[in-house]
Length: 401
Image (tube, rainbow, N blue to C red):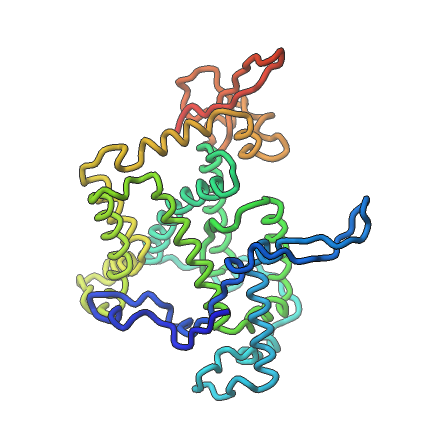
């Protein structure tokens, strides 16, 4: 654990021409580096098996549970400091936010059981600014999710996802945003590139979260996590997210001055412009209240500003396909269409896609894998039989975007 007593962005970022991207709530950060320093440490743990019965086996504990361990250890450490009154009790004193009893009233007031239901916070409201704001966020999330899917596949050694799998993932994210709005959570859903590995683990974790949402005391217990611990977790988690997003540029020629300008200008504007607009809202006035709200929402959304500028610049500044990384991405997509492994990984569960892929009702669904008998049919997957050593192997190819 690294204690950063007064962590914040450098003073020069406070100038009007720069940007302070630190969150004001988490300027007191205690950073965690458990995984990077202890990832090769094997921890002996008791294990039970049918053959060896009870025995001791070594396990990469810090590599498998880095976030959970760091969170629990930091939380426990803050609890000990709170019980022993090592941390100050005055809200104005430095170190008070590390106490675990600053939000104890939330735990005492939370009900034991509460069933969430649609419309629990009242009828939904619709505003022009809200619609444009969520559309900007959703479009940015869609672009980011496509990169997440490829990054997750690359990290776990799976083939790049085919088109129907990407469409299915984007559709589920949209459905999640719709359900989140109905239940009144206040935020949408998107993919996180660090959640990779077993799909059953993610499904089980989702079920656990659903149950925890019904038991108010359990959910309120997490509200007692000290702010510095959350800030330290944010440093690592969001740092990984940012790094994985930038890793999608590995196929782009970053020695090109064109690409360096597009990338640097878009990133910097995505940070600086929202900060400037937030501090100068009175300068965004057209005389029409609704239009002012739309402009303010869009210009204060960093994802929209950076993504829009990057999109415009990348498509208007001349550049070769190789320089822009288009050839490399095309080759990756072609390589992902070669074996049955792709079909097994990205097909629908329980053989649903195979049973109904020839149905006329599913041909119009962009997220459904389909069989094709003509190579020019758009959006279909083709199964071809190839003889090999007296046996027949099936090769799955996706013939379109």
